Picture 1 (cartoon, rainbow, N blue to C red):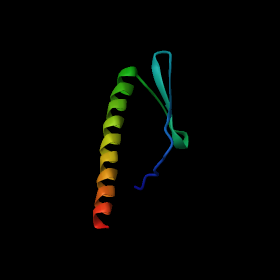
Picture 2 (tube, one colour; picture 1 turned 90 degrees about the horizontal axis):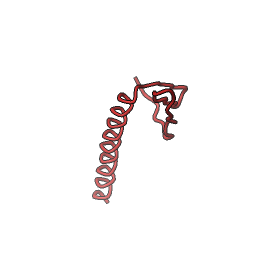
Picture 3 (tube, helix red, strand yellow; picture 1 turned 45 degrees about the horizontal axis):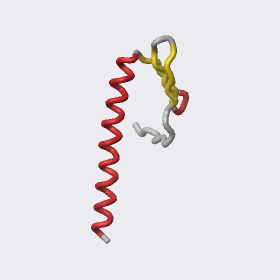
Picture 4 (tube, helix red, strand yellow; picture 1 turned 60 degrees about the horizontal axis):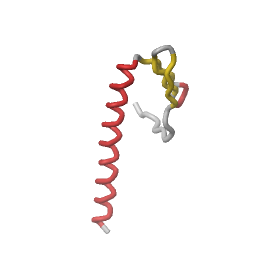
Length: 65
C-alpha cells in the first residue's frame, strides 16, 4: 500500500486529561498522556533516523560529483 507523504505537522492539544491529535486527511486520535509520550518518543526516533538517511543520501550524491 502506498502512503501519502505529508509535510505539515499535526495539531496537538490536551483536554480533560487526554491528548488530542488532529492530523492530515481528517485523522483524529485521542490518547492517554502515557500513550502520547511514548508516541512522541517513537516519532522523534523515527524522525532522527529518517533525517540521517537523507543526509547519507546527500553525501553519496556529493561524492559522485
